[in-house]
Length: 218
Image 1: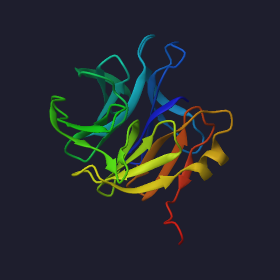
Image 2: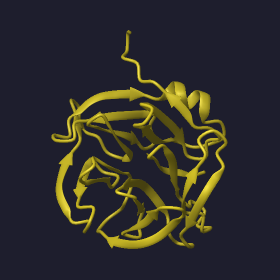
Image 3: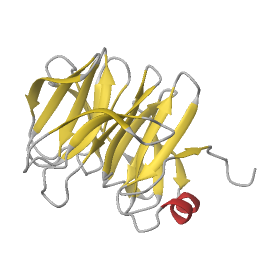
């Protein structure tokens, strides 16, 4: 899959994909963690490039890259398209903190949005000691912090959700060497709060990996 969004919800894994060939391959699906089998799925038509996903209160949100639309799906016995929101600019990564949707757009800016209206609540800018971190892509909210893939790199950054300060940088190179194969860049972070386990993958990778983050030198 051309993985753009990855999310656990009540112990179930969901994935959102993009469509680089403009062939109508954008979809969201519930995926079996072990086999990769798609249990249920729903797609968008040609011309829609899916991006990040997140799930709050039985509702799955899916960004689009340049269509300026966020689609919503009901999470029940099947995935059903339930609505849409409009926004300005590009959509990249998406996660939530239980109260707000948290969205990236490919710059250093992260936007908090109301889950009922998609209205902007606040924005933060992500910086480390050297300056702004651009190309923030897939997002995951883990233990009170925002984790973000940085597009075109093997790096993830751990972000203070209040200030935008980069608290840690994670080198994903060992994972890329093991998992990329003929695929593309590292992209996709999912944390299962039921088990405490975190998983990562990349675009068009054949596997998803359970990972552990280790402090350098330990």
